[in-house]
Image (cartoon, rainbow, N blue to C red):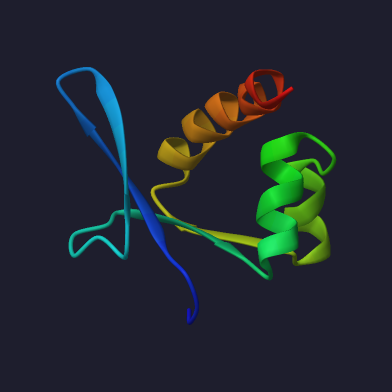
Length: 80
């Protein structure tokens, strides 16, 4: 798990993003490249397909990641 890292923290009903790894993370999404992360965020790649091809790995509390995936699916609409 080398390379750039971002963590998301839920506090008081809000999500906060920050650079770096969280010291107490309970769930992980690991992308094989910046291009994969970008593709998922801009809607050109499907996260579930990327899991199948190995471009995206998940571990830890999978329900947390599933909820985050629903939010990430909406990001592309805001980027357009």
